[in-house]
Image (cartoon, rainbow, N blue to C red; front, side):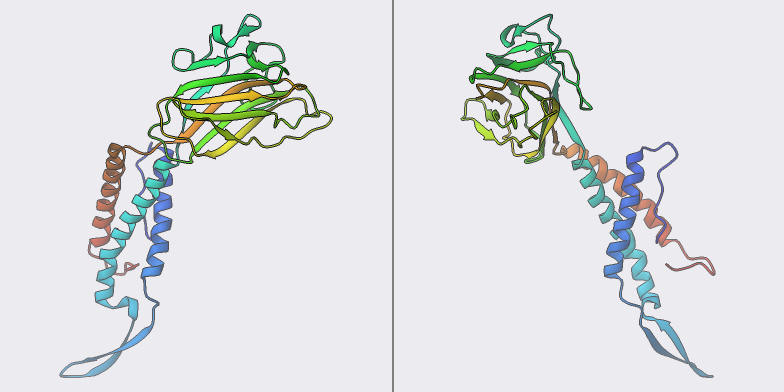
Length: 292
């Protein structure tokens, strides 16, 4: 494998990942471009003698020169491919809501939520501290939204901006609790809408029933195809007349579409590495040094 330039001491872990991944991809690409070494015979003659010289097909001077030109370009392409994918692979948390910490049972309309200064909250449910969330990694405890078993309770978060994020990259997670072990939690429904458009309903995965299942759990919905809007609303509703539900720790994340300036930055970095590698690859070979 060719010697790929290494990041300077103290460089970020991401720099190491980019260069290591690019080197691997570069070698794979080169293996497809490089012809199989097939011995050929070249007759060398002079006025005084003649001889047969055996050279590998990939070892002839013009092929070796081609390697020195092509391999740096393959490395540059590899760097661009790997770094572009890493730029897109970094999820961003759009918001996280822990429902605050009320002094007692408080109506949603008057409660101070964690994101009350940035988002809007509505509904006919209330916020309570009883049966605080627990049992999953991000459980915050304290307040949770309580939807009684009256069959008509709802809770909504609005004013969420989804502009600038890749379609179908949204992930929504939230803590959920059911009061009855017989419920599979599908009586709790979720919907979203952009501004004043119609609600789009999302199917929640059925949860286990039976003894010991009336506990807090984290529900995660991957790759949601949410619209690009400055005013996305998420709405939880309960249609159950026998089971009450609680909601806590709502988190929405997505993969941002890189800005042109970000592309320019990683292209500049890739070009720098390319220049360093080209300089190394094009320098004259010392006696006895491998051409690979």
